[in-house]
Amino acid sequence: MPLDGMNNLELPEHLNFEVELIKASDVVGTGFKVGPKVYAVHRKHDGLIYKFVSDRYQIVPYATSWQAVIDTCEEATLDLADVDIKHSDINSSGRWSAYLSFRTEIIEPRVGDIHSYGVNVGSSYDQSAPHSITSLANRWWCDNGCYTVEHTYKSSRKHTTNISIEKEVIKLKNGVQAFYDSEVTYKEWMQQHVGYDDAEHLFGNTIASYPYRNRIKTNEKLLTSLLADFQRSVSDMGANAWNAYNVATAWATHTEPSRGGTKLVTQERNATKVATMLNSKEWKELVDA
Image (cartoon, rainbow, N blue to C red; front, side, top):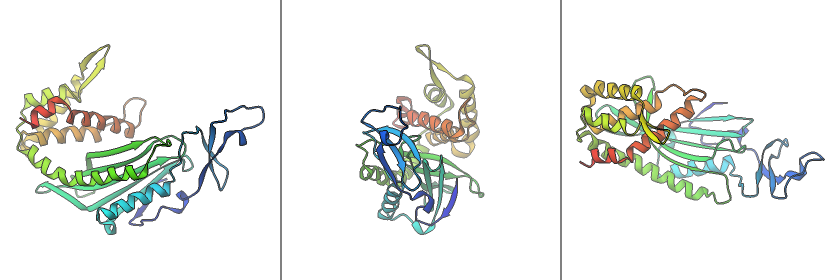
């Protein structure tokens, strides 16, 4: 259930409950046999069982994750006095996420092209999602609050005994720095020429490519769409790497869910393809030329 917390820095009360691991043999009915290393993720106040897990599972309380993010944002001197916060939870709070939008923490690679900083944190007790912290750069493109997620710096860990919240928030600090450093990178991309043929080679070998029966094929419909967007944006952004990057990130976020999937899953998969593009030899040949 979504909750608009605005700048309330406290975790909502209904999410701040105790969870413990108890032996599965203590909760299963008679006649059922379970191994000695099987445990139940158990909500203390009402006995709800979220999941049966192995002895490698480690509970990370939502309150611990939330406070670590808030503390890190304070250390990074982010403006917590003017942050919008939205908490969401499902599965009887077996899964939770929160989004912090810092509208005053901005970069402006060119006049009027504003990106603001955001953080997404999430976890689960029912193993439906790993523990994750993501730094976001949101490009605002209308006065009604519409934006495109253009940059992510994500850390995701399973709930095992080697998970370390301290290490995860270090990555969040790196994400804050990467956000502000990206302004310089974006300006460099604006100066790097990328023509139609360059864009076709880039998209055709990255975003629009897919494996098929031990070979790589091209999604011609997607490639045509990406190139049309690139051409359409040349008059505004120029024939450069910045334009190609914006076309790719716009595709990743403004998309319909794939067959049998959800929009969120499709966006996450597409974001991965964009990240792969930015690490590809085709991209590096363009920006390093």
